[in-house]
Length: 296
Image (tube, rainbow, N blue to C red; front, side, top):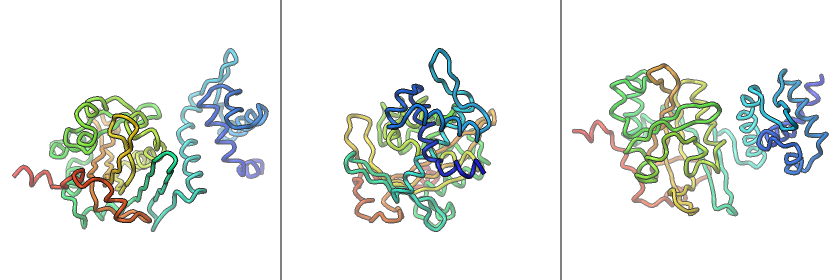
C-alpha cells in the first residue's frame, strides 16, 4: 500500500534523484529544484526504500553515488526524458513503433525519429542497408567475421563502458566520417555518444535505441531527421538519414553495437513532410549503393 501511495510521486522522486546525482550537492540540488532540503532527502529515502539499497553515500558532508546509484541513474534519466516528452506530445508509438517529435525554435534544434520494421529494408531502395543486413546474418553478429568486412568501412561501432556508449571505430566511408570530415573521423574514437558533435543535446534519446539493441542482441531500424553541427561552431545543419543498429560481438565475446547510417530523402516519419526531410542539401544524400556491386 505504501508503495502504491508513493508511486504517484514518481517523477518528483526521479527529479530529486537525478538532480542530486548530477550536482552531488544538496544545496545546489534544492536550488535547481526550487524545493527544500527536507523534501529532497525524503524523496531519496523513498527511492532507496523502493530499490532496497542506498543510492548515495555521504562522506565529509559530500555526497557520492553508490554502485546502485550509478546503475540506476541512466534509467532514471531515460524515464524522466521519456515522461516529459510524452507529456509534451513529443513521443508516442505509431503502429507499435517508437516515435519522437521534438521542436525547440529557441534553441534552433529539432529531432524527429520514427522506428521502422526491420523487414521494410528488403522492400526499400537502399542497397547498402540490404547488404548490411545480409552481412550481419552471415557473420552471425561476429564483428571480425569475414562476411562483415564488406560493410566495415561504412560502420560506426560502439562499446558500452560503465553507463556510456563509447565509439571504438569509425569507418572511412561512414555517414559520420563523410559528414564531419577527416579530423572529426579520427577524433571520434574513444569519445562517448554525448561527447560526439550533435550528441549532447539529445543524448538520452540517442541512448534509448542503443539500449534496445543491447537488450535484444538484435536489430533496430529508424528514420531520423534532425539538426546537427559539422563539428565547428554552433551552426546547425539539417540532416536526414536511415539507421540500422546491429547487435554484434567483439572477438572476446563482449557486446558491440554497429551503426550503419545512410543519409537519404527516402524517409517516412509520422508528421514530417517531404520539404523538411529534403531541407538537407541534395549533395549530402548518400548513394545507398550495395558495396558488393560497387566492387564489380
